[in-house]
Image 1 (cartoon, rainbow, N blue to C red):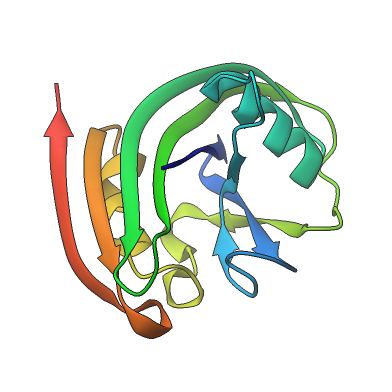
Image 2 (image 1 turned 180 degrees about the horizontal axis):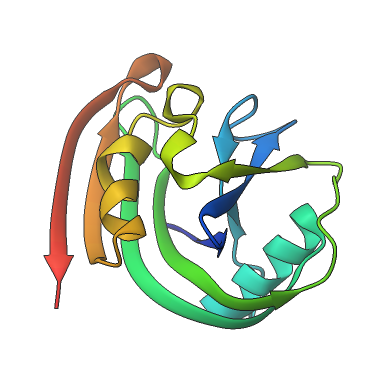
Length: 151
């Protein structure tokens, strides 16, 4: 199981997304994500990834979801802890990996993202706590999903 974190950065009625320039998820918009480094917890990973990918310093986070991803055509399995940045500072900057851009919350480019995003993001953005799992097949086609709300 690959352990990872991802962070939603929302300001006013906009969300900061990054266009992935390389690696896993290339050519898709996403939140700022990455695997945990050795001896790193989810919060530390979330802060590090946001800083590395868009230059912001995260001051306060709230964990609101745990999402599991698997692919039936390989052994990749991810457990991703999902945070919302409550306080942050700094200037948004492009990195080697991501091109950050602010989007209005009602204009999120779901058609240029992972297929699961349109299923659980609206719940997350509405303030819900979520536990979910998604199974992908060949060509990253979404085969199965389960989404539960947590208290």
